[in-house]
Length: 99
Image (cartoon, rainbow, N blue to C red):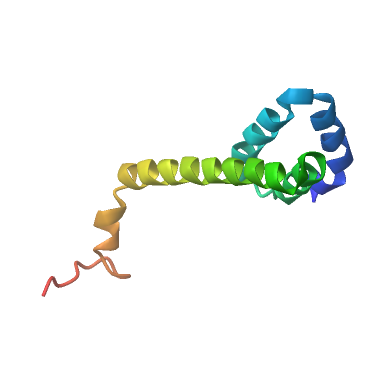
């Protein structure tokens, strides 16, 4: 909602950025992925500014990069928290039977 409220300002920023606009948009996707702010307005702005093919390519690359970064951090957090040991216990904290 916050991003959609200022989508005109973001569009103006991206247009004024010239050739750096796709790079800025590409960087915004992973940054916004860690927040509850949606990236749909950026995708629409890229589609309007660069057309459906290039805009979709920028959105695809940005969202894919964001997903890969989130997955990487998820793996690291899983290893840090010893999730596998916790998963082997049931709700009451007892060890599950292996067989």
